[in-house]
Image (cartoon, rainbow, N blue to C red; front, side, top):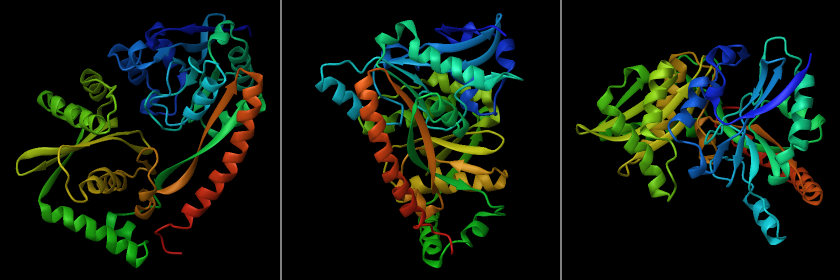
Length: 378
C-alpha cells in the first residue's frame, strides 16, 4: 500500500460514490448530507471562523480514510472549552489562533472522527494522520490540533501516538427496556417520581399541544416558524445563530425521519419548538426556542417528550445536549466524553498536558458525585 494525505476545502470535492465506500456508524452528523449542507448553506466559513480543511488518506487514488477538519479562528461552537489556553498564549505574546479542529461544527455529539474504508489498516492510518498533523508544512500557522468528542478507541489510538487526552462530562439517558414513561418513572425514588409528575401535570393544565414531526412531514410554510424559534435562544443569550433556514430545510428533506421537530402550540399559536436528530439507536436533542416563559415547558418539550419518543421507538439512548446538572434528577446520568490535543509549542505542550492530568482527577470526582445523585432506586 502507498498511502498519501491531502486536504480539501469542501466536502463536495469527494463524490457520493467515494463517500459510500467509507464505513459510517449511521450518525446523521457524519452523513454526507449534513457535512456538505454546512458548507453549501453558509453555516461554516470565514464569517464564523470555521474554514474547512478536511483530511483525506488515499491509497493510489482510492479514498481509504476521511477526517472532518477545520482551521479555526475562535473557540466558538466547540463545547470543549479552551478559552483559558488562548488567554495564556496571548499573555506570552503568542498566537493561539488559528488552530486545527476535528469536530462536527456546533454539535457536541461523540462519534467517529476518522471514517475508514472497509478493510483499511486503521493503526497505520492513525499513525500517518498523527504524523501529518504534527509535521504539516502549514502547521507553523496553527498553534495546535484538537479532536473533539471522538470514540474511545480513537482517543486510545491518538494517545499512543503522543497526543494528550481530555476528559469531559455529559448527561445521557439509557433505555433499560422501558415500556412507557410511567414504567420508566416506576424505577425512580418516590420523591423524584412525584416531582416529575407534578411538572408534567402543570404543563398539561396550561393547555399546550405538542406536534412531533419528522423532517419529511414538515410543510413548507412551517420552516420560517421553526427557524424563528431556533434563532430566538441565541438572541436572548447574545449569541450568533449559525445554522440557516435553508440548511434546516435541506437537512429535513435529506434526513427524513432522522430529523425531528417538536412544535408546541398554545391557544392556536405556536409558542415553542425543540429540534432533535436521531439514528437507528439514539435520539439527540439539539435546539430549543420559546417566545415566552411558561412554567416547566422546557422540561416537557425537550426532555419528557423526547423520552416518550425514544421509548415508543425502542431507541437505546437519548443525548439531550451538552452540560446541565439539572438533567440528573430526570434520569440523564453523567457519562465520560473525550477530546485529544496536540500543542505545537513544546513548553505549552507540557504545561497543558500537566493541566489535563489534574483536570481529569477533578472530573472523575465530579462524575462520581453526580452519579450518587441518581434519581433511581438503589
